[in-house]
Image (tube, rainbow, N blue to C red; front, top):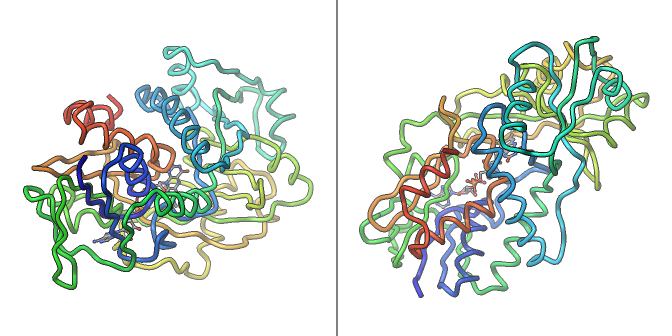
Length: 364
Ligand SMILES: Cc1cc2nc3c(=O)[nH]c(=O)nc-3n(C[C@H](O)[C@H](O)[C@H](O)COP(=O)(O)OP(=O)(O)OC[C@H]3O[C@@H](n4cnc5c(N)ncnc54)[C@H](O)[C@@H]3O)c2cc1C
């Protein structure tokens, strides 16, 4: 059995700690804030899981395995923090995200349905549609209740015997020695080291240092009464055309959420989670082109988070000495958290090779 040092208690670090303890390893989990940390990217009411990935067939297939990993976690937690609302990509023009997703569903054999404009207007009356519109649905999909999940994981790993070190900042890592030096000067050493520091990873792992960190903000809203049922009982929206806007229904005590990719900006991950005046309206404005009556939506709050991503939009694993570092988690990693934790531990144990871990994470 090994002693494994893990830096960062977001969904990746917590999941890695659980997978390691399940295999009998000793685990020390170091987190610079509370565990779980509301400033981490993993903290929000919900995060989306869906098979829709445009033409990225590798990630579509990985989502099957991700669901299996979630099912194993629900069994450990004794609770399911997910609702299968389904998810839809709406096609606007040839070659857009829905068209590419449909081609991938066909090529990978994922069971799916295509809704024509008439069916779509019944299921999704809140969207502006044309006679050419169609919707692509397929596989299990919907909200993962992120804050409940990381709180449940934190409680679970504590009960499993993981040594938790909250409010403890790692200043440097030594991959050859599998050790970390803390901000207070102490050194903690193990047999293997996992860095799961999210947007802050570039401060510890030189290979991540040049990677852009993005600030993203999402807006929770109350929809107009005329569309409340359609929003809250309908599917999550993955994409409308190539607009990049997405929505998650307000279910199980959560609110309807709007986000869109074009809103993210490069930023310092220590920029905080406050939202400037007018940001909610700026986010909602991105939806005005395809959501009816956007002016009637009442913003409730804005949720801010940070992640590392580059133009490849692929997860990146760095290995050096006895260290495995998980990077480029993008606005995409939550859904793969438990699966990633299991794969990292399988790699430390030698059941998966390091090159295989890297190419798998890159969706190849
Ligand atoms: C607005 C937004 C929307 C998103 N939507 C989705 C979605 O719908 N679906 C999806 O799958 N994913 C989504 N994501 C992405 C997903 O949330 C992240 O990829 C995932 O949570 C990353 O988890 P993590 O554990 O790697 O990082 P984090 O959750 O950020 O955890 C990293 C932890 O490391 C700690 N840490 C950092 N440096 C140190 C240090 N030096 N010493 C000690 N501790 C340290 C931090 O305090 C933090 O707690 C979204 C992200 C954001 C921000």
